[in-house]
Image (tube, rainbow, N blue to C red; front, side, top):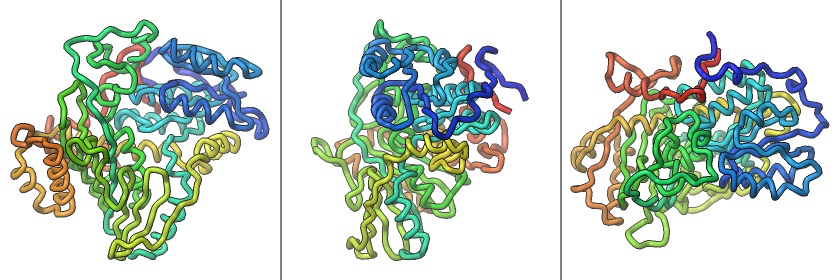
Length: 477
């Protein structure tokens, strides 16, 4: 099967010199996307032994100049460019570090693999289902090392906790609950298209997405809350916790069904994605995931929590609960909710080093979060969002009645209703959007459809959006 779409010049054969790196040589890295996470990664890679930052790329010339200037004292000044394709032609770049908006992740990963570069790609690794599969295919076809930036996989504390649970110390795992109680205030409401800052090349920023007028105040970061470029908070912060939930549930593929519901409450702004969301993933060990962007109540200064966890996960077992936090550690509670054991070992900071070690070894088995793991976990956020987007508005009584046969999920939804009431959200005026129940066939990697244009068919159609030439994500054989 040929590569579909894109410029012929972007379909690259990996130079032989880049297929193997001297185990003791310096690894040259190019970092693209220099916002919040990208700036952190600059500091991380700049401090690593045996690694040199050889290129920086960002479509915002002011941001690019700022961070390039910080590296002026390096023995060799890094290449500076606004177009990632120039970075891919740089033979001093052995690995590409991608920290761009989500809609660019897949295409840059595939282009980098075609150019013979290894890749560290931030979460969520993909913006939709289809391109995630192409990323895996590209890593395999071009024999590349591709690591997902889901750094909890490198947490020693979580690995120890997982071993403790799998040894049977808490009995059978009943379900895993993910929490993303993460404050997300209004991004404001505009009255029309906004001017693009002169320093930003908006054509390159937009890349594969539709080239549309800007209907938000900030180009940067707030793209998370628009479907053409982001995945909401379940695919932003939440994908870290989804990844750990799936890990502790012992599942290596997508579930057989999903249902998700919620809405955007507490303010009226330009954002499209829900700031309040609950999703049920139908695994043998079910995963229930909760997103909240509002404080615990109107005017409060703190978020809600369960057992002290606001952003993290709960492994609910017959004999107790393991409550893991955002930082990677956690506590074991007995059935009476008393703390009995803590896991607090470090390790997350080694995730980037793990990638560099695998670049040297050329063994994908050395990676803690190989691209396939990232694709599956990102897929959970895509499933939840597709269910939500294909849903319909429902009053409270009708929504709860539909969940009668799913008591644990219903309990999470009832708590969500109480949370919204505490924030003075009037649900008689702002109904809940109850998502479609979507069945999924993991073997075929697609939603189950029994007729044309049923909900499963729509979910499959929405799993591969149209791309804007020449920034077309190619199909990789």
